[in-house]
Image (cartoon, rainbow, N blue to C red; front, side, top):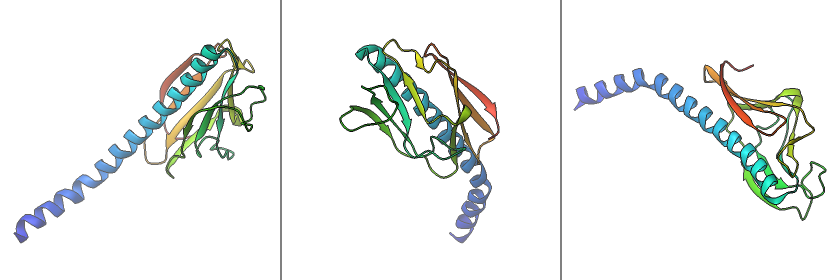
Length: 156
């Protein structure tokens, strides 16, 4: 029994680094999937309702704008801020400590008009990365509202 436990302990010691890397890679992939889905949900809701819909960072920090999660909401007055009385479509909680979600130019709001176009009309690039993973993802949202996910390396 002692021999069996020793062998199991050795196997776990060898497998642990690979397991941590796999877990981190899966969390990273899930995070970029959640972000891309939220972007498309916001655009689809704007098209369906014919009114502005926005995705706003919950607690933005410089260099980690969307780490604290985000809220997709119907922006009735089009001001890019979640005001009382505006309908919340979906809320994403914060990611764990080693995950980082940044935007180009430090944007904290992604807004779509009633026709599904970004307002203002400029491309926004989100970078989703982790300090434990060797790859990262870029979610690029074009001014026409379409999103594209590209895999890249490292955490900027």
